[in-house]
Image (cartoon, rainbow, N blue to C red):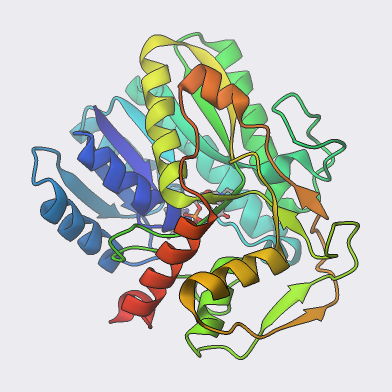
Length: 344
Ligand SMILES: NC(=O)c1ccc[n+]([C@@H]2O[C@H](COP(=O)([O-])OP(=O)(O)OC[C@H]3O[C@@H](n4cnc5c(N)ncnc54)[C@H](O)[C@@H]3O)[C@@H](O)[C@H]2O)c1
């Protein structure tokens, strides 16, 4: 297949592009590099060449998903079979401070993309959603039928709005086929150490913060909240290896070849770990001490959340295979081999 991957230079996008290429799909990445750089795609190319120098091609274009003219040109020049739409902004705290920016990129960008797809007659779309659409879970594990709507921040609301928009679109026209993938907490890196997560500025996700502390780039991990009603008082999340997550997208593409309409799937492991458990597991695997301090809870955070992943297993024939030690080892390998991220 030929796939347009928006945001394909980002953390999850780049790992997905590697898997798409190694499965023989041609890929065109559209990314404005607002949270990544072309170096990522150069690494992806090197990795692909070293692994399986096959026929699959990687091309990329620097540009914005909100640029309708550019999209029309790309759809006219390429015969895409489908689109995987990662491009978007993801920092919860920033979304609270700058909601317009988040709605414009995440909702506005998705509308423009769908308009261009419709005009070009491309109707297969995989969308990056999030477990945050469930808000504060009423029951655990969270399954796809759990109510959505009581979301805690503009970021989550922007994702839920796009889910509604895509569902309405698929109801209005049976040519659409939409996969809404609700990610839990992606972590880890490619086992080669060549690509991984490289947040700009201070990391807002746990694992990059832990690994930067272990590498001596930051002093200490701030654990937001030590008084949650969880076994050790710190927040509990379902961490999923980014390569497993990437493979979930390939499973969704396969589903699209035989189905129409909208599918919604959790991509998680079904197992929650607390922040303190994550720190200890990282220390054990890396052999590095990770000093931490417990600070105030962060606004918008829930106490605990983990997935019921069985729907994806039943319908997509996909499940997360990589465990906690592999997530830790791959994170540490990426950090050690690239102390300054893609800059070196
Ligand atoms: N990482 C997570 O914890 C997580 C969890 C749930 C959902 N998601 C969603 O998954 C998607 C990918 O996340 P990620 O962690 O890889 O983020 P990321 O920031 O690493 O990747 C997003 C990519 O999109 C690009 N981009 C952003 N806005 C764009 C625009 N308007 N036009 C073109 N390119 C644009 C960025 O430059 C970046 O390369 C996002 O939509 C995010 O909201 C992420």
